Length: 173
Image (cartoon, rainbow, N blue to C red; front, side, top):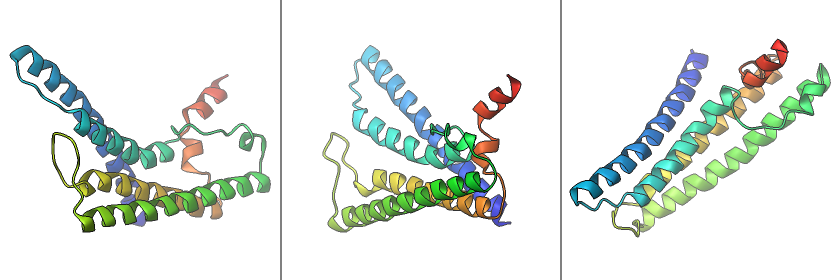
């Protein structure tokens, strides 16, 4: 039950990343069409918010599917206990770092909400709204890293290794 819930959360996070990336494309098209019909559409600020949302929502999904850019040249050389130790260290330190970042991001969102900060561009909105996507994506990444830590601790192969497209390429050669 918990496994399917977490996998669903990672999948939803990936879909949200894709949605915000598509929103950037739609905003660009709207600006181009607006120029042709004589309407000025300024979507630079909103596109920036969508880019941040897409980036942070995509982190956990990319991590779980092995598509993160990561240096595993050293870890690939290990096997058995040394490899498990290295994987535990990497996922553990990653979870702690992401957890700290998540804590700070949530604190920033709360402060921005408490102070009533607004965006400074042409489109005025509460600043905590776009910041919330960053904080939420960071929390989901923290969960994904902690999930992998527990998985490795239980003796399973990390999902990012079995899903890594480079592992499949290496096996074919």
